[in-house]
Amino acid sequence: MAETPARLTAKPSWLLNQVAVYAHRLASDSFSEVGARGYHYRILAALDEFGVASQADLGRRCNMDRSDVVAAINELAEQGFVERTPDPDDRRRNMVTLTKKGDRQLRRMDRALDKVQEDLLGPLSAEDRQTLTWLLTQLLEHHQRT
Image (cartoon, rainbow, N blue to C red):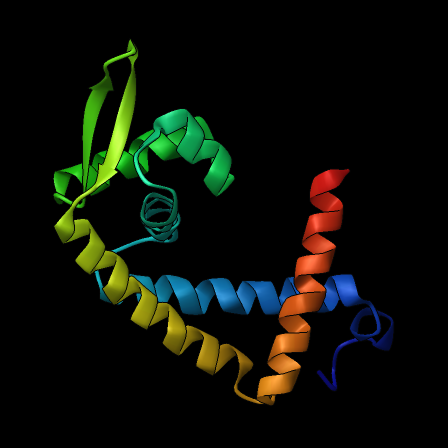
């Protein structure tokens, strides 16, 4: 950062953006090693935590555009990680379920992402990591309310 203008390095927004670029690259590379993408992780994690969901609910929970949800679910279904069935209450809506194979893939992705966290946050102590996570959560929650 010695060659970067001080007026940039003094701005948290610039620093957050630079770290986000690095974090995204690490996560993408790690997910590709297990044949996955970040959108896959979001969907599988939501299904694991909240259970069967409509595609629209997954989009809202995962903060994904509808077309990205459909594309990701298509990819996950082709690999047998999720099953898509018509909603018995509304045949126009699909319900998505995590399969056992999908649960195994989610665990592989969890391990890959844990390694990313170690790489990304390596210079920070455990206490600093908790503080950073808390601060970022506060910022995100604030901006999601507005």
